[in-house]
Each structure stands twice: as C-alpha cells, then as structure tokens.
Image 1 (spheres, rainbow, N blue to C red):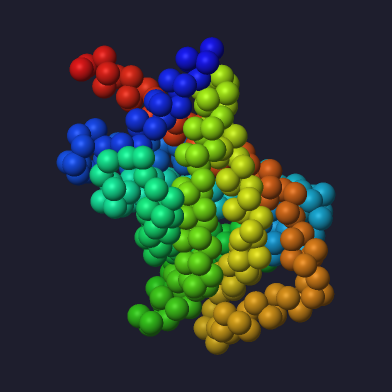
Image 2: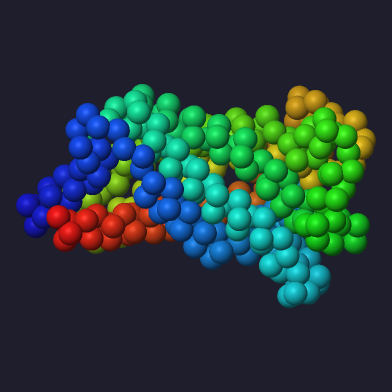
Length: 306
C-alpha cells in the first residue's frame, strides 16, 4: 500500500512536467479538458446557482428564493442557462489552457514553485475576466426576476446594449462592473491553482481512490476562495443587474450602497453563504475531479501508444 501511495504522488508530479524537458509545447489538450469539465459541472449545478443569485439580489432566505422561482413556473427554472453554460465552458478552456501555457513558459520542467503557479493563475484569471465579463453581464440581467417583462431573452438584452454608443456598449453594456470582476477572477484563479496540486498530491499519498484527492482538493479550494471573495461576488451581481443609460456609480459608491442596503452588517452581506459554500464545493470539486479523470485517461492512451 505504501508503494502504491508513493507512486500515485509521483504520477501527479509527473503530469506537471513538460513531456520533453526544455522543450515548450502548445498544451492544446489542457484547453479541451478544461472546456469539458466546466461544461459538465456547470450544467449539473445551475439550479443551485439560480437560488444563490436571487439571494444576492433580493437578500432573501433560501426558502423564499426557492418559492419565488417556483411561483414563476418550472419553465423559467433553467431560464438564463445558455450564457453561463457557454461562458463557463469558455472559462474552463481559457482558465486551464492559459494556466498550463503560462506555467510551461515560466518553468518548462516541473515541479513548479508556488510563485510560478500563483503568477500563472493570476494572469489566467485576468484573461478570463476580459474575455468572459460580457457573458456574466448578460447572465445577471437574465437572472433578475424584476427584468423578465422588459428583457425576456438574451436577444432583447443584446439589442439594448447595441443601441448605445461605442463607449456606452462597453462601460454601460457589456463591461459594466468589470473592475470587481477582474479582481475576483484574478485572485480566485491564483488561489485555486496555487493550492490545488499540493492538496491533491498530499491526499494521493494516503491510499485513497484516484477520484477522491481531486474531488476534495477542488472542493476545499472552491469553498475557501469563494468565502474570501464572496463580498466581491455580491457586488458584481448587484452592479451588473442594473441596465439602462442612467449614470453608473463608481466602484466605491456601489460598494457603499451595497453596505448600506444590507444594514451595514457583514452577516447580511454573507446571506446565502451556505448555498455558496455548497455550490462552490460541488462545482469546483466536480470540475477538478472530471478534469483529473480525463487527464488520466488521456495519459493512459498516450502510454499505450508509446
């Protein structure tokens, strides 16, 4: 058992190295595996996300959010799934692919130091924020029940944004609330990639089934990261749910308004935190486990061919 545990840890370490020492290759496989794992985890956890979003916008209890969704009708329960499904699939593509590309650039031969993992994760989060903020913006408008009559579909929202001038399309339309998105995504990615592999490698040496270390590592990272950055998550949801030509308040003014509307209490800012913990644990646990499973299958096929 001890020999098996040791080999499991070594196997994980081997996957963090370039296949040919000193030779940089385009890790196209990382982009594909990231897309598949994020697509599957997003589809499975979307109902939880929708309840959480209603809590963030209306500061209501879990039961009240579920009653509101049920009152609107089951046909609306998956309303708005296409933007997050597309954005999360692209997120996985960019996040895992860009991270692997940058990590290979920083240190072609592993094991990779913490500083390199942090930098690669931070920069991949920046790329993710720039590319995917418009998707999150449309998604947050669709999720807001107060805007269902005015904006019944994604097309209606896009028409509204495109009716603005060029600068308005960016600042008031697609990239409204961009700065907190940038901070949240960059720090979140840096934290996730910095500690994912060490936790997984440590658990792999304990003789656990192959899927357990990846699942636990993803769950722990997702939970801690989401709890630390949760105020930014709430701020983004509130900033991006607004729509129209009205003057957009500054980031500080938006944060202060959120603080005031929640009664200046941290507990109300974190309302819905229990579901956020569950969603983050399940989503990132599934994403990491699926990614690890697909990665193992891919490496097994390569070893058979070799």
